[in-house]
Length: 309
Image 1 (cartoon, helix red, strand yellow):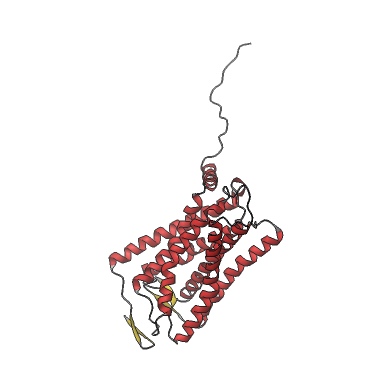
Image 2: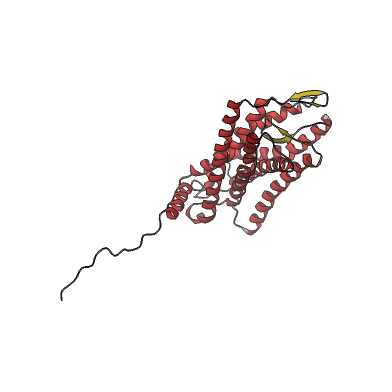
């Protein structure tokens, strides 16, 4: 099937059966890892907070909620789209909006976590807690606002390569340029600079505040979270830069758009594994699962001995 956009013909290639079922298997595995993994992480963070040290808990909760929502709604949407051959309105527009909201909330939460780890500002003080919550909510709201712009202007169309509804530009290069520059500058580039700067300063030991339990805190996994996010979202950024550099509004190659979706989904399933690399968090999770699986034993009468007095 071919479609004509702004003087350029784009051909939608149907997936061969082998590739289709391979992607279905990969998406299914990523969805299970994301939903089950982040669901268990949320339980551990909420019910076992006293069993491990976590001074910057709110960004961790925000990041886990973002990963859980993406796994439950976006990855499942892509999986159903592969099985049914597309997405219909209004689910098409909702998934597109949610995906961008989850992307911005994830990078925003990681940026806040990096800043807190550098400065040593915990999430328990009244004033600091309000600031952290406000910034985390702002990252969610910003993602929803920028994600709703393509929906309002009807730029959304199902993309078989991305396996979900994405932005297709049919108007002008200037519209695309303004939107991508604004969205990336506010939602992606600024948090990325914070992550890069704070990570470098922390790596060189430039902590503004330090405590004796830094090594035991869950925040020690932050470098792994940063590395995983940058690795998994690099194809997405590259595909957007390719689109930005093409005056005819033609998208990036199909294989790159597919890779960008698969890799971004993979990040949702990797984060729970990263949390479990922390020994205290892993032990708290195992203790929670074991206590729920194995009920407390009660004394049982096994024999009666008769005493002659």
